[in-house]
Structures are given as C-alpha cells and as structure tokens.
Amino acid sequence: ATISTPAATPSPAGENTDTEALVSVPAAPAIDPQSVYIEAMSALGAAEDEASAATAISLLQDAAALGFPPAQLQLGELFKSGQGIDQDLGQARVWFRRAANGGNVLAMHRIGVMTARGDGGPADSQEAIAWFERAANYGLVDSQYNLGAIYHPTGDATSAIQDAGKAYYW
Image (cartoon, rainbow, N blue to C red; front, side):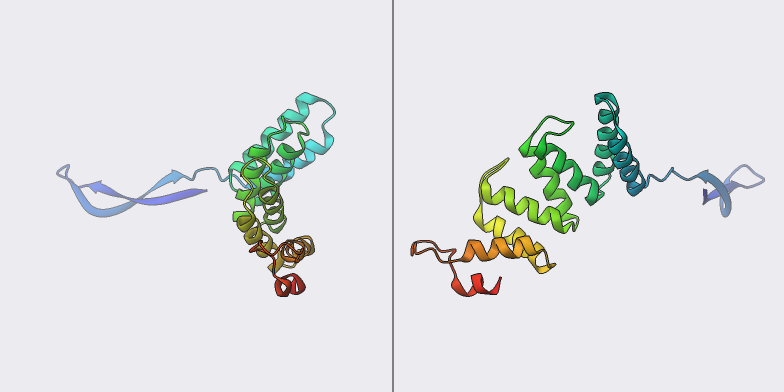
C-alpha cells in the first residue's frame, strides 16, 4: 500500500510553486498484535524445548507490548506462575493492570486478587474492591463472590469495609 502526499512542483524558472503533485510514499508495514498473539500462543503450545518456548514467549511479549490485552493477560499469567519465565509477581501485577486497563475482565479480577493479597506489591483493600467491582459489573462471578466475602460482617466492628447490605447485594 502506498500513501499519496502532495509535493511542491518546480516552476519553469526553478522556483517551487503551490501546485500540488502526488508523490507515492510506501506505507509503514502494519503489525497486527492479534496475529502476533495467535502465533505466539500456537508456538507456545507446540514448544517442545526451552529454546522454542523462549521464542514463543518473546512473541507474546511483542504482542503485549503492542497493547493487546489478551497477550498482556497471558504474559501476566506466565510471570505469576513462573512457567517458561522467571516468576516475578511484580511484573505479573504490571501486565494484569495493563490488560485490565485495556478492558480485559479476567485481568481486572486478577489484579484485584493480587492487590487484595499484596502479591507483587502493597496490599490495598480499596483498590482491590475497585477492581473487583469493575469485573463484577461485567458479570464475572468470582469477583462478585469476592466482593460479598469482603463486605460480609465478621463481628469486627472496627472494620470500615464490612457492610451487610453490600455483602448481600454481591
């Protein structure tokens, strides 16, 4: 594909005029992150040794870096579990957050769980609740359950999070 751009044309006296002529410029090659992701997952599933798995993970990282939420989620899962890559809960949290911000509902739940537990970073119950609510509002039952459990009264009257009405709602 080419892109046509206007260019000034010289006049007979050698001066540029405002007359436009079209110049063909090759378009930048488009990289489809979904295609890269599909190729990475296929290669990861077919990997029979560490070298081929590393190549597949590199492709997955490329797709994630291009902003493809399913690739970001999968990369977070690999960092969380340590499968084919060194376990790094901080990086898992980073990639889950990126996928969640990209609209991936399961990633919203994953970052909620990691934030509630303090895995890969500080625990923050209010942030965890916010992520669970986002996922729960999309219908993710596990997040709805977690919200019910978080809000459920336990008899500790000092907790500001306990709310029987919200626990019942979720």
